[in-house]
Image (cartoon, rainbow, N blue to C red; front, side):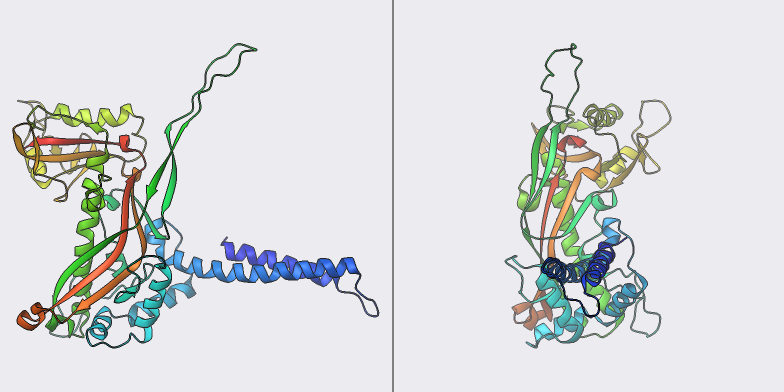
Length: 422
């Protein structure tokens, strides 16, 4: 049951108690009854505020359920969301920004919602905002000679991109405000056998905190003026796709490699389980692939679904590398490596150095539920139509500002290779 419904039940109970305190015909309310009545009345007013606040939160959460595993929106809420999806146009918002006009209608409403979500963030208010809960899914165009059918995804679904790490099960936190600290445990508590009257040994857990703070990501994209002036569904989808690509690339690299602004919080940089191949690097063998699995299992981190991630170059190499020389069977077989699902990404580094080795590739194995991607507020988009690109090339500079951070719950839940040659 939703919290707003529970609060409504509490409110109904309070109202019944108030009715019971009312004096009968010809009677007067006692001082004690009046005091209790006034207290109940104040509680009802507070419940009214709580109900309204939770109803708003539940409407937003329902729209976010696709990222957080919640229940889908109720039919009435979903109809309202679908109506917003049909009415909202990023191209209209961009054109308004270019021409110095105020946003109006649904574009203005979405901007105000984004402002509420992003209060306290330094970039809030720049250009026009799109709230993180809004997902204006488009239908593929089926008529009109100028419309090219393409796969179309939700706008904010795109601005919360389909990351490699997210697809592998990483944790996505959205709608955050301020800095966030997540409590963590480094060493679990243990038990010891003691004598009948001996003191219990101190074997408590080792606690720590995982800190997350907003980092501004400015995704810069040139879009042709001709495309912006289009009214077609496919033009709308193309602009959204361009913004999606610009944001997705940077967030994915930050999580897989070295964190926002190369702060070392990404998996490759932060993992303490480094499987070394050689002094100067070397070929990734079957033994080293298995060693990655062993490193994670040794840390008791092989509890959930585990995955390998390789560069695209390593994927090609492993497809033609035998597990054991002279015997059938290659390391990468039907998107499985060592019995686990394997994916390839160009966002893993492939220009690493070690000793005299260069152009070395990275690889990851681990439990991606321990990888956290956090986003604050919505996305604010600024439009620069006065640049030399506009006058010379007919290109409009669009910058999408959003706020992100990445962290690992347990760095030991991942094993990494940093010196694989191909």
